[in-house]
Structure formats: C-alpha cells, structure tokens
Image (cartoon, rainbow, N blue to C red):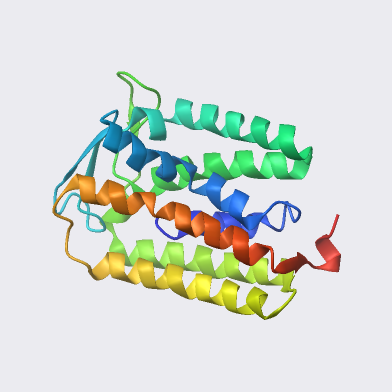
Length: 221
C-alpha cells in the first residue's frame, strides 16, 4: 500500500491530536523505513521481476526482520515504549503502536503471499489486492481522501505555511503515487533501496508542516 500508509498517519491525528504528524508518519511507514536499510546491509533480499503482480515489479524474496508479523509487533511495541517514555501521552502511545501494526495489515491486504509470520520458516500471508490495479487504486484512493478530510477537520493552519505545506504535501504524495504507476521497472534492487531511504524526507516534511497547524477546539487535549 503506497499511499494508504501516509493515510493512516493523517487519520491518526483524530485519535492522537497532540502527536506530531511526523511521528505518526514515522510509525505508519516504519517497516518501509527499515526495509531499504536492511536491503543495503544484505539482511533482506528482493529482486526485480516485472509481472510479479500487476501493481509492482518487486519480488520480496525475504524480509523477515522488517515485515514479519512477529517483528512488526516487536517494532510497534519498542516504538510505543520509546514514545511513551519521552512524551507520557497515552493516546499518542496507542496511536503510534496501532500505526506501526497497521502497516503489516495493509501490506497483507495488498501483497501476494510473501509476508512471513515470523523470521525463519513460517507461513506467509497476502491477499493479493495488487493483482487488481483498478481495485487497488480505488481502495487506496478512498482511504487517502478520507484521511485528508479527517486531518483537515482535526487541525487548522496557524499561518500560510500551514496551508501551503499541507496541500503541497498532499499533491506530492499523489504525484509520487501516479509516477509509481506509470514508471518503468527499476533496473537494480539497490536503486530501489536508495530511493526508499528518501522516505525519511516525507517524515521531515510532515513534522515541519504539522508545526504550522494546531488542533481544533473539538479535539484539543
């Protein structure tokens, strides 16, 4: 799910209004922030296989440390514990835990059966939504539009940056999504990993724009 993960972060502001959108984005995308690093380190493997699904040419050969269900629960718990230690905000703690776990749930919906339950030999999960491009775009698009509406209602701009930063962020995510649909397959997995690391820039962007928006009175506190 390429745009549904940011959608989770945007929507989570309804539940945890005091948590930075940058933190929620980190949580919702956490598995994919780890994955390119683990690829470059040689801990996980993937290959380019055009036609692997109708939606992506990537064959996720092995990614038990970033994307298995067991490790997802461990990452989510560690993330939440660190967040709670620093912030002492229970709604945010639960919000980031759910956001990390949501990544695996959404991937299980979209991937073919390649998501392991745990490191080592284990069953693999995947319902294969990516084999149906139109359905994928409809589902992800609906989730993203809903999340935009939730975030826009739960926060208001504190200044012009709060307006420009937010809507430029939305447009950029849509643009990246469209380019991913029409771009030719990458030549090397290493290139995919390097580009994947740039997702940290989205985290920084989300943190910056959220500093220029404030919680609405209805959800404050």
